[in-house]
Length: 326
Image (cartoon, rainbow, N blue to C red; front, side):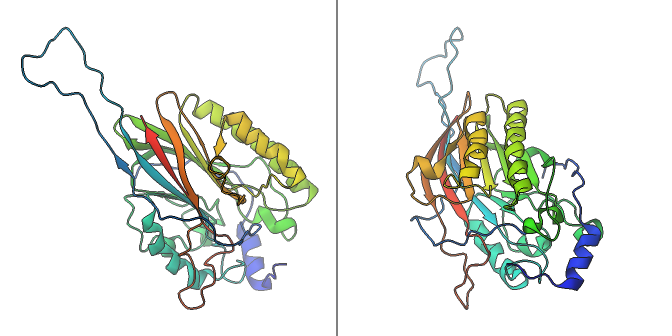
């Protein structure tokens, strides 16, 4: 059970709430923990593309024929990581010590989706080398309260960044205190190569186990499937984050089905028979012009404290490598 410092809690309660977040420009909780054990093998792959094209050899081009460009292909490695970034004393981790250690480790992954990037965004981004970094919402949590904690760091550009809060939350000092943050999902359209786009959703579900939390997760997954249908019809998808859902929990079976079946998604872990289902997931879907194939799923082992060897968050990160063709 988490112990709350009375002074810090009083401050957070004064500035936090469940008001809906505003959309952000995409150019460029404390929640249930799942420490688990490190599994999987392999290392992150750097995104690459193969800009193939048809080229005539000799003679004069025939203007009456149009050559069809060869499909492009490459790989994308995605990391999803709940970094436990509530203020020191409220976080179930040790963010003042751990988040500066997390920052440089993120550079091995071309696309990073983080949750609970609430209070230490400057420290988390201090050593990252990604060219495209989302701005946190809100920019000043000290003044405006704790936001959604959802940010993304990408080697390739993204646009149309949008943030949405779940329709409801439950618990301020009980039931995992989900209302201390503005949990929800974010969306952006990522360009992997010229003409090759993938819609990427980053989410953080309610964490509590009270009846109200279970009902909110059930309805929220339906709402997410509807939002995906509105924004991403026919498009390739990556949906990742802290789902706080397990197929082994009876109350989670229907919410998982709402997302998986409602949006036509495949769990990379299950597709590769990883044998290690977690609440932190990477789900994917092919689009009409872009295909995504699961190649690898693993829990990176390097995210541990340099001195103690303890995990740097109350969650372990999850990584997946996808091959793409478009």
